[in-house]
Image (cartoon, one colour):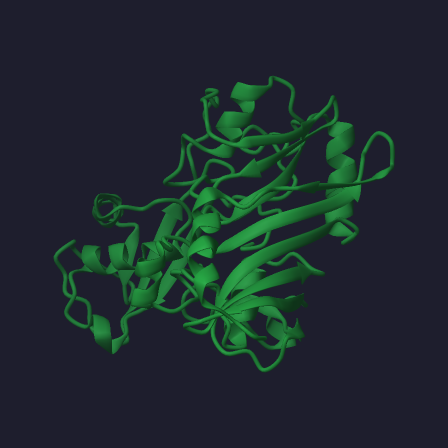
Length: 328
C-alpha cells in the first residue's frame, strides 16, 4: 500500500500497457524494461526477453520478437506467471525487531525488501528472513505467506505485525478487515498544498490502461478509500513533510490519493514526478514510512501501539532539508 493490504497471489496475472507516442519505435524488450515498475518484483530486461520468447507477451494479440519496434497506441499484454511453489529456505534478511512474544512479532521493514515471494522475487524476501528468525509462524496464508496479515510495498519502510500462530492470525486479520487497526504514515510530498490538512474520499481501482497500476476511479469501478493528511513541515523546492492516516487499506492508497491532489510522494517512480532535486537530496525511492501501528493484542485484548524509527536514508533526506524550512 503504498499502504499495507492483504493481497492474494493469482495463478497468473495479466499486465496491459498501451504504447504512448513517446515510446514509438522502441524495441519491445526495451519498452517492457522501461515499464518494469508496473510489475510485481524486480524484472530485468533479460527476464522480459525470456517472457517474450515463451510467448507470454502479445502485441495487439500477436506474438512478436524481442527486437520488434512498438508503435503508438498498440496494446502490450504480458502474462506474468506466479512463483513456482517450493519449500521456502530460511535466509538471513535484514529487518529490525521491535517486539516479540508467543503470539506476535512486530518489526521495522527496511526499504527495498519485498514482503513475500512473487514472480521476480523468489528469494531474499521478508518471509525468508522471518523463517530464519523463528520457526513458529501461522500457516493460515499458506507456504508462500506464513504469518503475513498485511504488507508494505517493497520501497515503503516501517512497522509491520506478523502472526506467530493461527489464533493471532484470525484476530489480526479481523482487525485489519474491520478497520480497527490504526496506521499512521509519514511522507515527503512534492507540490503546493491547498491548505495545511485535508481528507481525501475517492474510490480506488485498477488503472484503465496499465492494469498493474491503481488510479482514482468512479465509485462503480473501484473501492471506497479515505486518506487524512496534515502538513507538519514545509521546505524549499515545494517539498512537504506530512503525517498521513488511512481509514481504509487499498493497494497503493496513499501514493494514488496524494498524487490525485497534486501532492505525490517524492521519489515515487510510478505515481510521482521526475525531478533533478531528488538526486541532490539522495532520494532513491518513494519517501513513505509506516511510523505507527495500533491494534488489540490477540492474547490480552489490550490496545498496543508500536513505532518504527525512520530508516537511515529517509532520515538523511530530512537532515539535508532542515536547512530550508519555511513557514507553513
